[in-house]
Length: 372
Image (tube, rainbow, N blue to C red; front, side, top):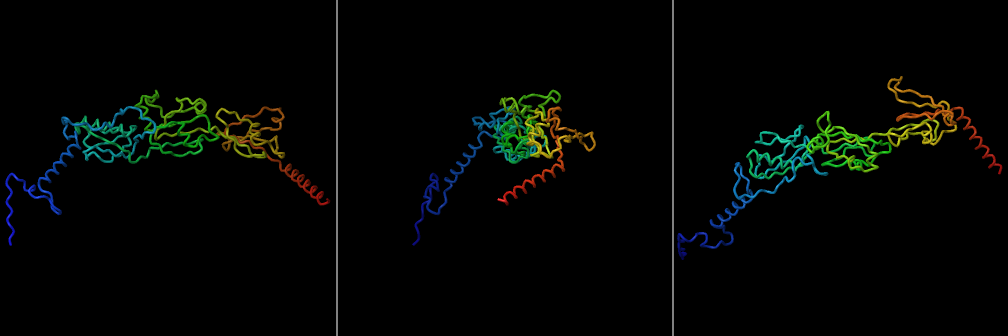
């Protein structure tokens, strides 16, 4: 039997609504149209107020502010700062032509497509750089309400070098501002031979950050000083915050050594002895005391201080020292300088006599024990 013919739907009855969608069936045209409308409306809501033309849309909602911080404000401690040769990823919402990774030039700038002038980036945090880029795009009429994010992907200068008289002299990673005391603490503290002075050589990040913050200016350079010195003794004793200076990526911190004097020869403890600080006055008697006194075989009248002097033959001079008179109080105690060597000669004859006496004592002791 032939199947009865279905009536043709009227013009007012949608074809897709006439029969339900069963398993394995595809949605009708109206359903597809409805889904497409939802997708279009969702896309328009997402892009919001962004337009490629310079005229902003009415009733558009601005994206979240990405730069509440002024680009000239001084970065807070532990914030990452952009440095020369960094790789930064810039993302501009719905503008793929500008959303990519950029290399910061040695001069501290990045070049974005369609912008006439490069953008100064060094010394800014990623948030501050986002604000600057957004402002440039808005001023150029390229994006009415730009939403920009910046992330540092790679950095060669986010480190600080700590050297000199510290316990762990090396290069430490640093992604933002910190202080001198924090850096010295990370380096294990001061070494025993540390002096009273730390020298800080500023890098490009510090010079830009301090310059924009209106810090002290070197009168000769017209810019922040490239090298500063800090009195460590005063800083550690008083905790003066003015001496606990800010350290930035690319800076170099060197702790000066107070100096070492060496005592060698016929003494009980041969070695180098660090001065406590730059101002300590080392003398021959202090050196002998640190060396735990002279040996019995020392030739006290023929001691010498060996001191470096570029103009002398061989680059050094020998200063005679009569320890016998100094110890007896008949001659002044001679002053020593950092890196001086006090040499006390040893008498071969005295050593031989002493060894003979020690041997005789041992033999006598052995005979007494044997007779018992």
